[in-house]
Length: 398
Ligand SMILES: Nc1nc2c(c(=O)[nH]1)N[C@H]1C(S)=C(S)[C@@H](COP(=O)(O)O)O[C@H]1N2
Ligand SMILES: [Mo]
Image (cartoon, rainbow, N blue to C red):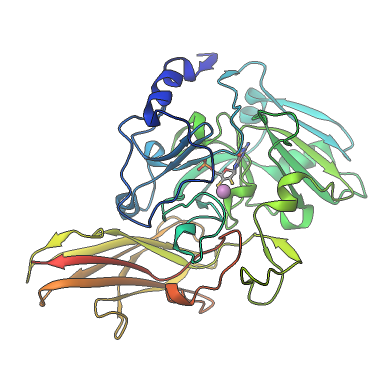
């Protein structure tokens, strides 16, 4: 197939999902109890749907029992309503220009044939994941904890592409742009800028996700993968890489995905901190995939608490489980097979011996000794970024 035509059938289907179009950023959802939509987007199963234009889809809690997130369960986030729905695979190129010795236009075929193919398993998490846990409410989509996933990404090293183009001496910044467009002229495109020295050999331009072409909504045919970093910089439908010597101050780097640039990265609604910095490395976090809130489980039965933990690549050392409201903590069993940027799966055998509501909490600790704070102790920032409070589900023992 030389051409991918995605939304022919699905525009109609997606319009029917919510009836009216929600606009991004106005929907409030509690951390749990969200229901998945009845309709599905192309290549996706029904997911929690905040908006259909642009598509904003969240994975339900049950997704996080698996170390690898299946493509059709993977969350989706776009900022611009205007996403190309047709991609011509023969003419699609990625352009590398700016402060390079040789400007390049690389076709998909060249990308796959002329460069070494590499693979990395890495967690993709929106910086606003779990935002709905902040009080008072922080601006933005009120995600539960399903704006994350972990996949095997295959592609080529960004550094190999840059070496082929050849960087000029004063090259310092690098900008990434995707094919999506703003609906209104005044809104700038989704562009990310990063300092060249931040980008190491693990950064890839990926065309495969879990052994298949990238799903359209996850950035087909190419996306940037920056293991350990929040995913706002994992530009999808990547079409332009521009090398510069100075920071161009493009919209998204300047206002969105930034946190207070102070020691605790926090502020209060009354006293906003003026100096900000972009979010980059992910902090340590874990999410329980099973059981879910409000599930009924039998007294004296044997249940296995399951979930996933991750950080920015230092690696998970322990996941601790508490079934007594945080008084005592017990080690969960860990499964770590896919490298330091992947999910660590955890499981914990639990036999409920008391009736009524029981809290199950999970706390991850990484190899640096960083551990998740209690949810109530997570400090506030106005964008609602980097929430990593200890996860808790409440079940009923009957
Ligand atoms: N081209 C483009 N790339 C993008 C975005 C976007 O709006 N346009 N959003 C970013 C943000 S904020 C997130 S959280 C991730 C979401 O990736 P996913 O949709 O594959 O889950 O894509 C990133 N890359
Ligand atoms: Mo995001």
